[in-house]
Image (cartoon, rainbow, N blue to C red; front, side, top):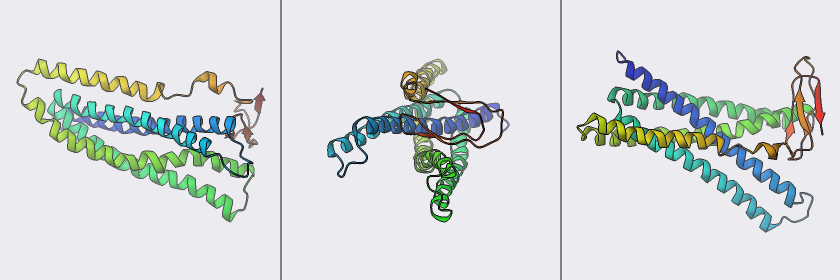
Length: 252
């Protein structure tokens, strides 16, 4: 710990963990949004029998966005494990330790938090028998965050930690065999640029276009001047938006 590079590596490893949780959640949100839009535009939920064609299309949409998010994340994790090994050995050691340390506690936190949100909805539905109320709408919104927490990001941190640590220990043999520091810096810089490019793509290429969001029948404008609980509002995409403050204005 006397080396400043180790401290920087720890911070780098922690930042990658938090980036990963955001990027994986973003991929889930975008895929779910596209699936909801397709279901509303092409499927009749009150039909007696479901359309096999439409059902397959919904599965295809979810699969496409899951694969897009997976490729962005994998390339970033792969390139960072290669790039950082070329710069400084102490920095890379701190990076591997940071990935394992922050990843473990972040996985535990997200699994517990997601489970709590999910259980809150079940309690309202089963124990309190308040399905269809404003309280239930609030727990549904919370569960939309809890599901990617406990079912996507938390469980996926396990292979991220394993791949980074195992592959990183193998990749560190490559810069050790290169005697010239200038060449190592050049190679590391190349992989770092690739990683930063896909980090950018993991958020901005996976975002829902703003013009699509503006097509909702109702836009929620919140004014946090009061303290009363507002009723849930349903937009064109069928998403219940719940506000915890008063003065909610619906604009067509």
